[in-house]
Length: 141
Image (tube, rainbow, N blue to C red; front, side, top):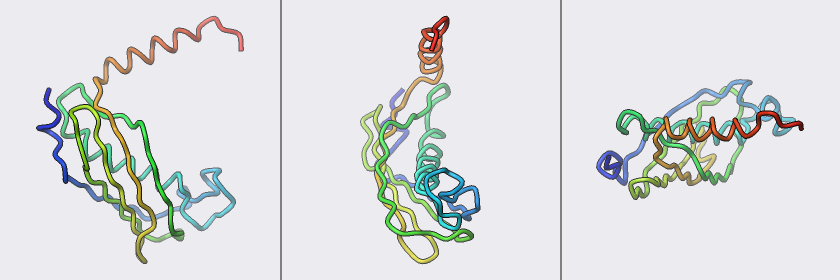
C-alpha cells in the first residue's frame, strides 16, 4: 500500500452544518452558553471533515485515526448559523498525514487549526484494543 499515491498534498474537503442546540456549549458540558457553538463541536466537525477526506481514499481494511488536534476557536457562532469547515492536506509521509483546518460561519472566520492523522490497519487496531481490554478483566477498581 502506497498511501502517498492515494493522498496528495493540497487535497481538500469542505463540509457544512447548521448549528443546533446539540452543538452548544451547554449541551457539551463545556460551558453555560446555550446559544453559542461549543469548541468541542467545532473540533468534532473539523475531525469529521478530515476523516471523510482521507478514509475514502485508502485501500480496503485501512483507516485513519487522529492523534493530534490543535484548534484556535477565535470567534463565537450563534445557534442557527451555518458553519463551513475546510481541511487541506499539508503533508503525507505514507503513514502520518498533517492537515490544516479552517472554519467559517456566515460572518467570517471562526477557527483555525492543524490535525495529525495516522493510517492504520483497522483489524490490527481492533485486536490491540481487545488485548488492552483483556488486561482489565478480573481487576477490582
